[in-house]
Image (cartoon, rainbow, N blue to C red; front, side, top):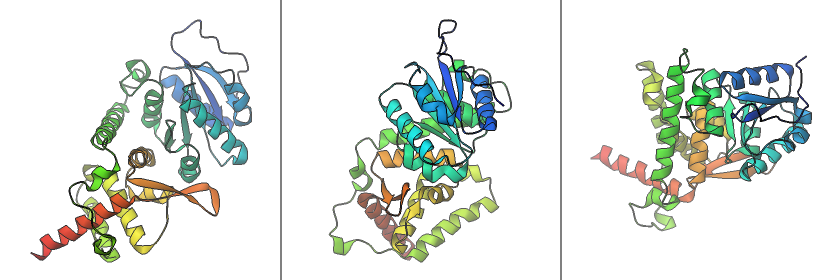
Length: 306
C-alpha cells in the first residue's frame, strides 16, 4: 500500500510550491508521484481519490493538484473534477488530470475547456510538460531541469513548440469566430454551397495515404483534420464525441484536446450536451466554420474543373 500524507502542508523549507496528488489506485498514486518528483516539484500530500475533496480544502493557493485516474470513478470522481474546475477558475491552484484514453469523453465533459491540463495516455515527457504548463509555463527551467538531459528532451522540446503553435493560432483567431469566413460576403441560406460527403471522405483518405510514404509527424495538422471530420459528420448528420474527434486529429489525444480547446474557445467548434448521457458532450462546427469549409470545397472544385 502507498503511504498517504495527512498532515497540513509545510511550505517553510522550499520555495517550490507543493503538489497534492490524488489517485484512484496505489499504482496511479505511485505513477503520479514519480512524475511530480521528476519534474523537480515538491509533493505536499498523497491521498486516495475519495479523500481528495476534503484534503484540497487545506491546499495552499499557490499549490497544484495532480489527479491520476485509471478508471471511471463515478459520481465521486465527477464531484471532485467539478470542484477542481471551479477552484482553478477561481485561481486557488493549478491542476493536471492524467487518465487513459477510455476516459476522454468523461473528462472533456467535466473539465474540457477549462484551464485544467489534461494528459491522455501520456509518456513521461508529456506528463512533465503538462505540470510545467499548469504551474508556471512550458519554459520554466526549474520544473523541466530534471528531464532536459535525458532521452525525453527532444519530445519535451516538441511539446514546447506545440504549445507555442497553439498560442499563435489563438492570437490569429483573436478577432472572434467571424474571422473564419471574413473574406467572403454573407450568403443567403439557399445559396450555401453543397458539398458531397464522398468528396470529403476522399480528401480525408488522401491525407491518410501520405503516411505510407512519409513520416506521419511531417504532416501533423490536427486543426484541419478535425475540421474535415466535423464537416463530414455534419453532411452525414452524425454526432461526433470527443474521443472520435481525437482519433480523427491523428495526433496524441493530449495534443488533440489542446487544439480542441483552442478551436472551441474561439467559437469555431461548438459543444453540445448528449441528451441521453449527462457525462458526455458532442462537438460540431459552428455555423461560420461550416460555411467557410463549404466555400473552400466549392472553390477547390472550381479550380479542379478549370
